[in-house]
Length: 379
Image (tube, rainbow, N blue to C red; front, side, top):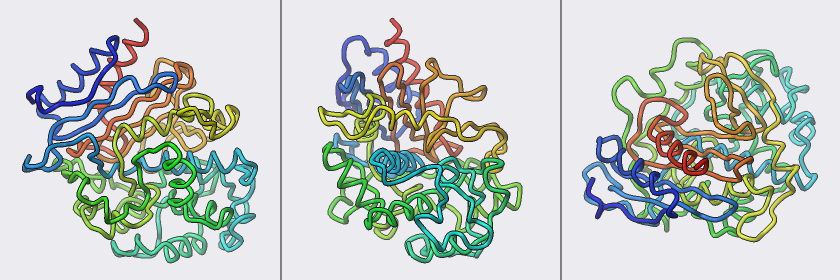
């Protein structure tokens, strides 16, 4: 990629971050992408470049946004942490305290913390679904309320790929009387002036980059080897082309349907990196932020088939994912998007792109850029 197709800025000490970002384009790993970093609440890297479509007819602009799949979960988790910090939500309480119908079929003892850490045993819907069912909020949450757990809750994690957003979102709706997308917009995104949406208005469609599906063998459905994985990942299945439709973009799918860019992702999560304060405004207490660091469950994840460590709504470092500072949380989205929040360094790193790689939660394109940023911090 030629330099004239990249834009943005880096503070002097982060010059190597620009080189790493550009290298992804040079080797053909990216078509269009953005990367942003904040430090002590200040944006120190904000880069974007390439093209918003596979045919390379539309440049990736400063305000280009894109579906980031499961990086959306971090926005849902942050919203839940905010509501809990106000004293309206108790993570240790049974879900049924807020959502009485949820107690059906042996779920009376499932805690909100189990929803936040993928340990509720509800990683997918057992009833066969069509793609358009995902856009029917009431149907999706009613099915989850009636369904029996797929494994004993609280004993093991199993990535709640699509269901987590509906589960946490319905608890928040029951508490606040507002949808998760509206609470997020009114209490986080709009006060920050952050361009991230859970439920995108049609007026914003022209700015959305087209996601480019993963290479053969790299799709989420290719992971399926067990019945639980099939229920979780193949019902209704993930169709990347659906992200180009008005129905997907407009629906509130708070585990996978969020639309934004690296700038909005990094600047929103600066709330957690900086003890509850972002852009001069206090959103929550430092103790409320640090709830995200509390280990909820670890061990072999039933969906990933690999070890995982989950805090309150975020992944935690461990043997599989080693990060420089212990008080760090992260998560990523199908195809490659990623957010890392380092509470020790008071920094956030975010990456969003349109060319999807193989895998479900981030990939090495983001980590190569973030590694350059961490090295700059240590210098």
